[in-house]
Image (cartoon, one colour):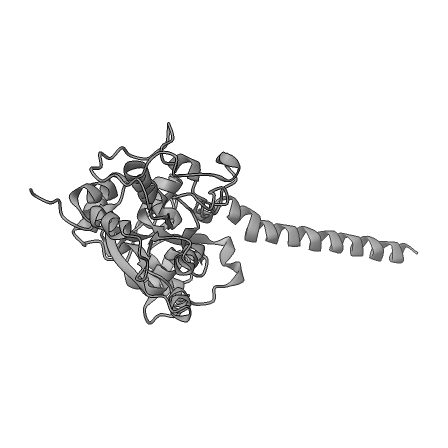
Length: 335
């Protein structure tokens, strides 16, 4: 009897020990590491469109003294999240008040992808994926965006639409980590190998002994398309399921990270020893500089489209690009 009781007690103690060991291992593996994880600050944030509404008191749009004023046949402007400040400032500077209208007559904060802009509004916000569809379908006249993905090009081709891409500004494609990550600089080759999963621990690139969690973006988004071009011949690897317990690296465009998201808990990395400052973008010393475009259908007969694009390439228009936080594609013109 005593022997049976002793065995039962021993079994209970063993079960308790197993559960305690499991809980401790889960704490060490997940809870403790995630509590100080570098990755929390790399989560993407949605642009707050209400801060960039034209002709609205208190908006974050710069004041540009534009000589061009359009009053009729206004091209409908749309674009990527990162470029909302650019085309909203165009509307604010060149278009008349009252041309931006909302469903129900009032702008709502629930406006993640332009749901509140009315069909007759001169400003829309569909972001990259829906924006490319809108320009092909003819519901937008000018799209402000990065270069298209292969699928977006194919959609235009399948619909018999020729798109014209006019470079109007420069931007840096950047990689970022949490501010507590000791790594400040990576080579382009190191970044490619991280995303190819050849490097899986930060210690392999001069950092802490912690797994790397390489974060990608939505297929067809401007940043994901740019990232895939950056990878070149490298294939994006399949990361370990445990990578979420490590420290993340993410990517975006400089202005979106620096000015729109404004998340001070993350830091942009230097690449090949060069930081993505406006000066280093302009002189092309930063190695991943890209153009962004004003895009329109070749068969669009709105005569104000070429007028507006010519103005964007003028000194005034390039000043607008600069004032919204981007880098002008043309040097300052000397009269």
